[in-house]
Length: 439
Image (tube, rainbow, N blue to C red; front, side, top):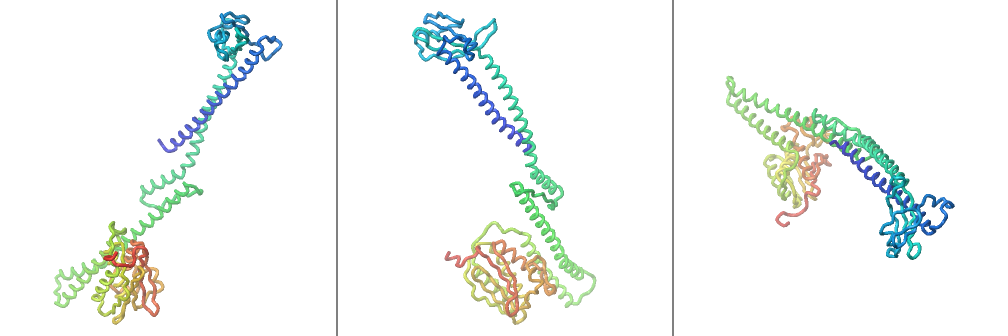
């Protein structure tokens, strides 16, 4: 059953219950009022049973009889039974009202009787034909049934209309989702409409679609860029391998140069594939651990001194810092920051590294960032015009940003006073001062 049908049935059911209760209440209230009116008039007549009936229109049509304790009666012909005799004999002092069945000219009629003690040893019975009450109640029941059925039908129709209008945004969401599932393109959007819960759902759905579209576009760009970046070293590798396998005689020094190129290109390929895997991994690993960031930085600086021996590496003021995060990824990010600074440092230059307040800063004395390059240095595969002559694929600082965001932190690149560049990695709440062995 569809949601629209369920809502329609619920609306009809609720109205049916409400109208049914109202109808039943109305019926019994009217019945009570009609009987109360008759009982009041019968009570007045029973208190003055000898009143000349033709002179009192309110008592016209009433039947009056007096009953003795032995069951004999005088007056109108009324059937005498035990309850009436009990009233006449004094055993039932308060009297009663009741309905009885009588026959008039061979036809059954319903009488409403008031039986009370008139005087000691005499009970008075005043009765009135109340067939008209049953007739009126029958008409009332018929009218109430019609009203109830009409109310239910109107409620069902209104429920169908309201549920259709209410569920229209949901239907549009469903159609959009089905279209996206069919085409694989999350470019579809749904109208957000007014400011209500369904409009908020539509807005959230559009936001989700926008994020999905952006994610897919990023994935496509990543695949395209990765394919492009991998094609160049693969082509160079293939060319050098073809030369080595060819029939052309090579001098020993030529062969050595080709082998050196193959080694260098294979190292670049390895670094590129490692970077691609790091970026493709996207989300952080499931398990975190506490590690000493200052010790990790010291190890990376020692490695940088070996990799760039012509650069002076100064790691001063490394504050003992504990990070609750992913050690392997953080080690890769720190190395990328140092490697970037080393590549841009001239021979005899220096790089300063500091760690304080959960922020790692690496400052070099190279040319710094060009104004047009600085907003893009953390983008994947971005390489400035000056960097294209250097080895690399433009993934180093992009990985730094990915790692920082995986730890809830951020990165920033700026030009330093006096020349050079500063790259900062801030870990915010993921880092705090201290040592793991003392915590």
